[in-house]
Length: 387
Ligand code: FEO
Image (cartoon, rainbow, N blue to C red; front, side, top):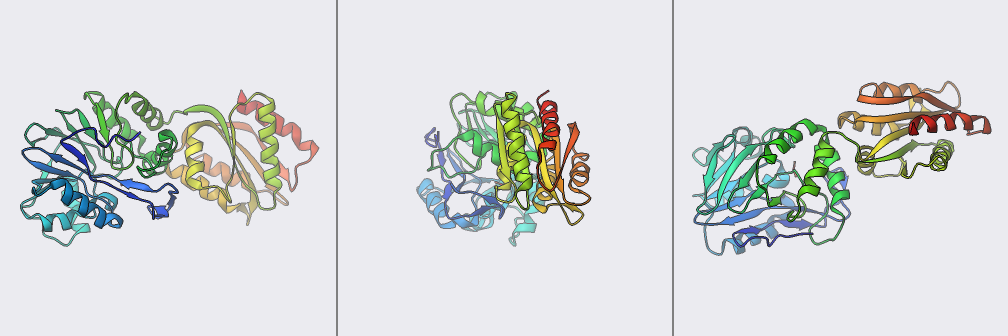
């Protein structure tokens, strides 16, 4: 999967991090993460991004070895988020002749992160600007909001390499073997998912380039047939479901809503649904639930009522779905209550904030425990979901 030795002149000097528990202090990364950084060695030498503070020693040693006594002429900053940009000031201090190349927006934001006066040390570049390193030439392409406003990507024309910033990144260190799609999807929807429009704009720009290799800031260097990865990004960024299937996300206090959720799954399977995925919101990794909500075409939200509203694990998911611009899916609601159920009303108030949702007309209300008389309503809901 990983092809970091794809070029003699473009060297990987990034770092794996297996000791981190939560990326961005919120996403579980049981297989770690990589902070990617590259060197282009030509008549001029360019460092392509730095790494997170957690990998300082490792990166500085790889940089020293990669430079092999040479001095860098440029540090190209594609993204100013600290997991990539932490070492800008340190590198600038180590190499006083080095120029920092970044978008104008990144240059304007640099004083927010660093104490150094960068006057005379920066080159602000715009869309289409070029930087020749000798045989290698970089063309800069602005990519605002993929993931921050200052983001740009660059295209190296002699080897047809796209340095794609956070785009095409994934969770997982490079020394583990896993499925690109799953951890790239979880990364995409939780980190970049809100910005489908800007990603579409970047994909349109990239379509005009002859790209042989993609060098992202996380995850493996992508080579070979790139259409698989670009196709996934087309699907994800246009908010199209990747697969037909039903995700049932339930928030259950005493297990009764859980029983109803499992019964609905059984009915759906009996009616021919091939993909039915159940998630207990009290225990599941929320980022995985969000990933799967976007992956499949249908979503059932089943929750207990609580404090005149909805049980908090469900409210947490709904807040995230609104924030991540969840849309273009069929949604169904199941509520439970022991007196005056309120969960359905609150869940619907969130769903009403989402675009292009086909809400099933039936909302099933369970009074405390699932009973035989409730089965016809679950049957009806299953019919509506699969229609
Ligand atoms: Fe990997 Fe938006 O930083």
